[in-house]
Length: 273
Image (cartoon, rainbow, N blue to C red; front, side, top):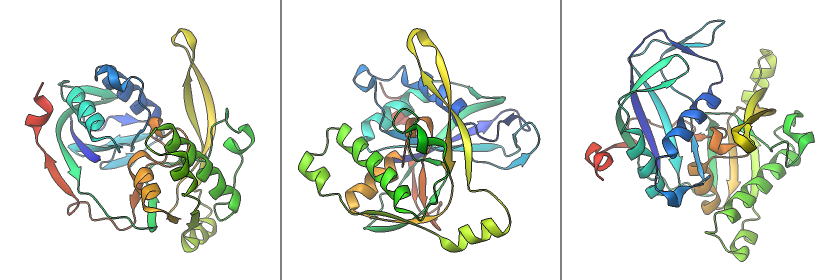
């Protein structure tokens, strides 16, 4: 289930760094500490960056809209509800310099994805972690190569198997998996000397509550994914690639209609014990 959480922005003009997933990760971690013990730990979820009217400065992204939105998603609806229940117990939360008041949540309507889906990245896709493959975690890999698809296929199969929801035989049947980037988009980006792949910081939890900083390469571009429907559903709800619980790899459909796709999520459900 994918939900859009709408916050009232209480201090217009406040800012966050251009890439602020690590700040959102800190907030999400705090919220998840209060969900039922059965979800400790639970890693099959994903979230977007904050969306709203922004201006860029040397400090980062300044938000000037009265509201900002966060997309939060997981295939486990009960887990999403537990997250929302915990979040709406707060009168105010902060992300960087932003002071945010949870106002409402909207549930995206289910979508039949099929086996050939055009996606756009609404947060960077990371191919692999340094622990899994240090060479490919930072090296630039051309998206139209087999290596690019293969790394994401291996990551996806590992994550799906880890859920315990798929048998080994079922995992073996998901052999169809190919990413085909939008060639026109990549050509235009290169002609304009813009970047669709950048180095981003991520933070790994260490013993004694310490964190170690890592650097990984993230990719942001539209593409078509050819894969089975179950694989498509998993990636649409849980994200693509590495570090999805830290807000990387969130996907949306190309040309999606944001107004048509949502229904209100009753606040009474969130306030219920």
